[in-house]
Image (spheres, each protein chain N blue to C red):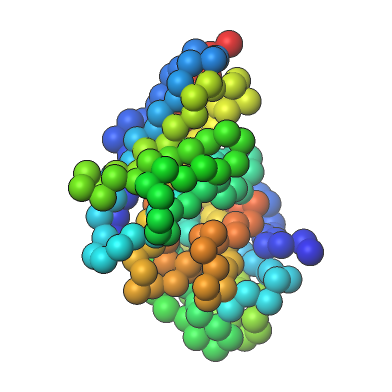
Length: 115
Length: 113
């Protein structure tokens, strides 16, 4: 079975400071990993993915994520947070044996960027 | 393209009532899924489909039915609503080989009294 853990409930960061949102996963085989962002009263928007290749992947809005196979982690990062980055962030994993209709999500992390 | 659309946006039901949440996509995607989102629990898969006429259960299927008579539509039926089904429901679509995960609709916020 595939699963994702996002250990923190809320991440508070001052505007301009680095932002990190943590994610660890469990899946058989090589994982497909995703980060999504949800703004209030909106659906989920795709941010970035790791399928294969470089462990550091870059996505939308200046976000990046680092895949670490030995630690089974896929932490989301942004070098300098903006107030507009305040949102709910979800990490998701897909077992390669399944299609994209069977994603497993973490519980989500509320990010609050303080002006 | 409208993408993935969901109706209604909001719904209040009484315990025991039935209703159907509608989901449609105009991208000709084979894969469609229903998730529910609850605070502190993330999104959990209810039912999914790999094509017209084919559906299967996800993580939390009890109390919900689905059918997939066309590629475009994937309605979710609540047969007898319960307060435990109060949640935000998201429909998603995708296709084989897509490496960007899934495309999500805007959600339906359901309250069962």
